[in-house]
Amino acid sequence: RKGSVIITGASSGLGLATAKALAETGEWHVIMACRNFLKAEKAAKSVGITKENYSVMHLDLASLESVRQFADTFRRSGRPLDALVCNAAVYLPTAKEPTYTAEGFELSVGTNHLGHFLLARLLLDDLKQSDYPYKRLIIVGSITGNTNTLAGNVPPKANLGDLRGLAGGLNGIQSSAMIDGGDFDGAKAYKDSKVCNMLTMQEFHRRYHEETGITFASLYPGCIATTGLFREHIPLFRLLFPPFQKYITKGYVSEEEAGGRLAQVVSDPSLTKSGVYWSWNKNSESFENQLSKEASDAEKARKLWEVSEKLVGLA
Ligand code: NDP
Image 1 (cartoon, rainbow, N blue to C red):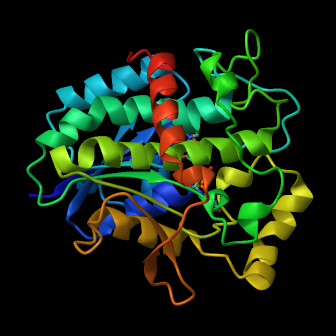
Image 2 (cartoon, rainbow, N blue to C red; image 1 turned 90 degrees about the vertical axis):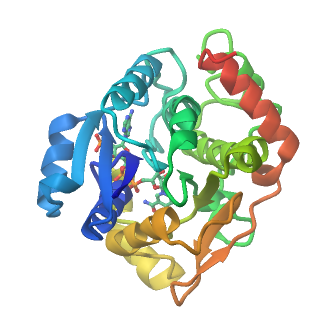
């Protein structure tokens, strides 16, 4: 039978390119989990994904209610779950003030981390039940966890501190809107959320890999300077960032190439190792990359897991 994969945020950028790459093999049915149903349908058509290879299901990660409804609706669809790709993200580098999810969490961490944390926890049982030759839970990471690159050291740097802002509810009222309890900074909030993604992947691996056989992995697909992720940035940045990445840092990858990389992590029979953060070298070969000290801190991962469980109503 075909594999069945859920990709969050498949309506643009990396998620869409990955959906296309997997659907084209004819071996996968892609469930595009998107907040804008019509946009997702149009996106699928625009890149030529054929009808029998995808379906769109509504998911707004900025609402825990929507995440729960998505899990229910997916279950009622009767489809198996062989792979889950947590890809969607928002990036608000120019925001002066925090904005919030339906439950009142700062939007970047609320969407990128907490929404995906609840989704992955709810769908873990469905993955367990899959009889596919391999089953995988992939959480898209970022370079901000790499200490061996320049880009990982550009300020403001990610720092979760002692998680006091998160533990306080991340709502800007009783607590700070930032995980570490500091002043709001949109670029840092995004980087913090990506560190949470990578810590979460490793904690899943420690808690569930042995028992379930599920492969948990993360990746940095390269700098895809053309995606919608930079839509909130100032126009000059959006103009100069792609050529800067192409010619100066040489970290640039096309959406198509990045989609191929993520599709590889989902479906390549040789990439079954769990707990890995994948990256690609100049020759586009995958390798196991090292994470920064904070992004591989097991004690912080455990604490993040426990605090997140409380916030999303699982504990
Ligand atoms: P895009 O902005 O193109 O795609 C983000 C996707 O997330 C969109 O489909 C968007 O939906 C969706 N999304 C945003 N908010 C929500 C929500 N509340 N509920 C459901 N879906 C939502 O960015 P990219 O493709 O670049 O980003 C994809 C992933 O790649 C992210 O995890 C990002 O951190 C990561 N990444 C990107 C890099 C890059 O250079 N671009 C580098 C490293 C990592 P909609 O279409 O409706 O807006």
